Length: 161
Image 1 (cartoon, rainbow, N blue to C red):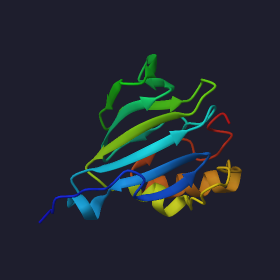
Image 2: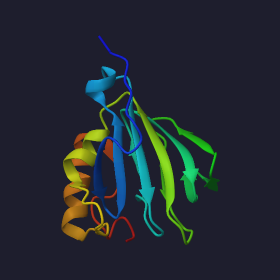
Image 3: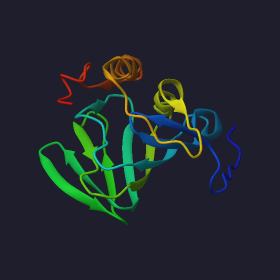
């Protein structure tokens, strides 16, 4: 049975994942698998390559800044207050093309994909810069992502990075 959940501001497990910071606010264990919620800080130039989630729907709520979204054949800019829903099986990507950090809330339903950030990311260290990954880390993370139902490029070269 799922219990009510309150995660105060600044709480949750924060990991660094390929140049961005992700804080897990709700996960499989706290929502009985219903959904996962992550808060993110995405620096300029960061964002994943075009990919597909085969097991979960993904939604984005932009808190601040802006992100360029590519969803199927549509390309648009999501700004503070915008909501984007991407049904499972839909090719998509996002990238921070601005000069400032973008902050978002990600929702996955059902839960489970948060495991990628928890298992492949590095525990964040306050006061330290967020590291960008090299090819070996990117490839290791994409292998884990594939195990979680993610379809996308497996190498940085395939990703156009």
